[in-house]
Image (tube, rainbow, N blue to C red):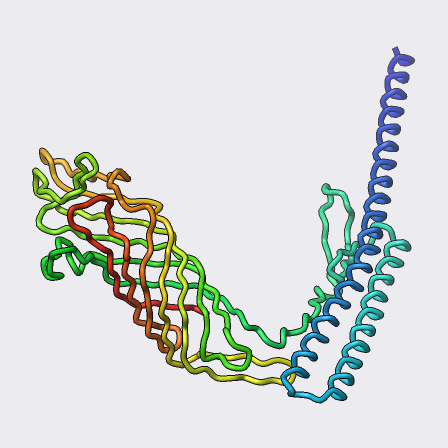
Amino acid sequence: MNTITRLVVYAIISVTFATTHAQEKAVDSLKKTSVDYKIEALETLKTKIEKEEREFLKQEIESINERLDAKQITAAEAEELKKEAAEKRAANIENRLAIVDNKIELLKRNDSVYSVDDDESFIFRIGGDNDDFGDEFIYFGKKNRVHKPRKYDRRTTSDIVFAIGFNNAIIEGQDFDDSPYKLGGSGFIELGYAWKTRIFDNTNFWRLKYGFSFQWNKFDIKDNQYFVNTDGDVTLQEFPVELNKAKFRTTNLVFPVHLEFGPSKKIEKEDYFRYSTRNKFKIGLGGYAGLNIGSMQKLKYKEDGNRIKDKQRGGFEVNEFVYGLSGYLAWGDTALYVKYDLNPLFKDQAFDQNNISVGLRFDMD
């Protein structure tokens, strides 16, 4: 019996030893592979550094040439600035490559004790690599942010556009006072993105503003009426019971274009210049075109003591193609904003009605 027990114990010890040895070899192999991968990544980073610094030098030379063309510097000064820029970028390449080479040598000597990444920082690890023990790190250095040269002249800028205000409709053959839509409860919201480009080289008085926007136009219907589609003819009719609320909304995706003009301040620095319209008066005149992407009527009422909320989506013969005129008077980032749809709201109606909106517009540039 003792012989059998000894054999079993020997077998267990042998299997355990073999398994442990295999695990150690696997870990060593993994560490080696990880180190080789990091070294390869660092070698690739060296090529990236050279390319990046050359691209920065190209941008700096373009900026210098723009200043020369604008007669802000002489040809001799331009050559001297180009020489200084080239020397700086060459020194940057030399220093950054030396950092990467030192990391490579550090990895070769220490295997898994050190780990480095490709952002030109390195990490010293205290503790093992095994998840059973956890990892603790001490970080040396910090992420190196490479200085990208500022563009000498930025002719195009961008900003978010937000507008909100009152909404109603101009109806053919009707005075505005007779509108079936409540003034206070009818409103619009616009949210979009716009680019602004200076038109001429040496003045910022004229700008072209363009982009895309989502428009939500809402009508609060008066006199217990609601929209009914009868064989393509959409009309307002009296609802059979008392309505607590009757609202109709259209959603449009449009592409506005405005010619903007007004004074601006020129800010000149040694290596760049900008035009600023901060706290300046400006006017924008233009229009928009796009598509209707949705319509909905929302009714709230009581029936047999129960509160009913009825949302009717689509089926109102709304014009699919949307286009109109718009304009704004602004001081700084805030403007009085007006837009008017040239297209009728509904298709094939006996009396056209065109959406009109007045409110405030905020260009957050």
